[in-house]
Image (tube, rainbow, N blue to C red; front, top):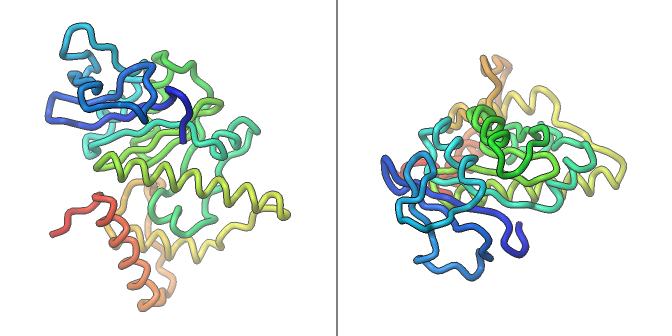
Length: 231
């Protein structure tokens, strides 16, 4: 997902503390002592610490999504190639993406490290689990660091599949009835992020056995990622 010293990761430590990766360090060589503790405004608690230049973007995510516990920002190559080419990740193609991520929006270019980025990401992440930053990278949120990372991994995997489909002749999307059933799966599994504003489940006939199987699969994925309580 990243090379060299790219990318940054944060986690919520408590009601008024965040933990974030430092600036300019390869993530593969980090030790626990390298991580930076900040307040909720992104200011390091320990004098002399230098946290990621993208800390404001992370702070914006926690401000707009009080339910999350972690933010992962990276540069997944295929997903970013879509934005460089002026393409979006077509929605309503892969069932597992429809259910667990919903729509993954591509945000217009903003200058990395500037306050343009958090101003764009914050409102967008209120109704998304992951976003692509045009020409720049991608970001995902979750209850835990690993659940956020898995969502980012799913974005890149979906982008790779869509790229192959484009090469094979183009993208076919799921029909509206199939999407309605997947949205109902979301609703019954308690997954509300990623649904369009004002969404109402379809009243069309639904295969109950298939729906139960879909809901079970969705719940298990979220249990494994830590997104749902195990009780």
